[in-house]
Image (cartoon, rainbow, N blue to C red; front, side):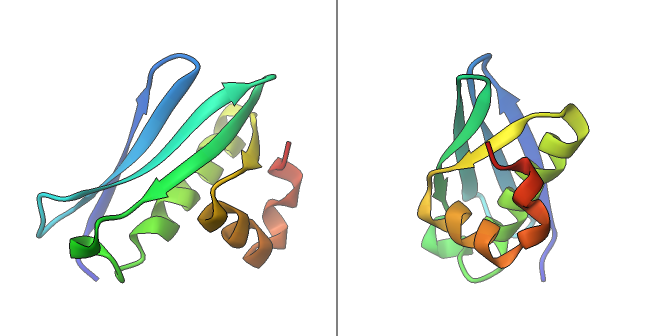
Length: 96
C-alpha cells in the first residue's frame, strides 16, 4: 500500500481528519461535530481515485486513537463508521 498520512483539522466543535495519499492529490476525509460532549462521526468521504486502499479505515482508526488519547466518546453516525465499530468490538468502550 502507498503511504497514507492522516492530519487532524480541529475547528472547535467540529473538524475533520484528512488522509493524504503519497501518490495522489486527492484527499479522504472523516468529518465530525461535538454534540453533548460526544464526537459525532458524520461523514467518511474517499474519492474514487484513492478508493480501495484502506483510506477510510485509516481515517476511522485515527479518530479512535484520538478518542483514546484525549478521552472523548464517539457516536458513529456515518454508515462506514457504524460498520467499522461493528467489526471492532474492542472499540465499544468509546461509544457515546
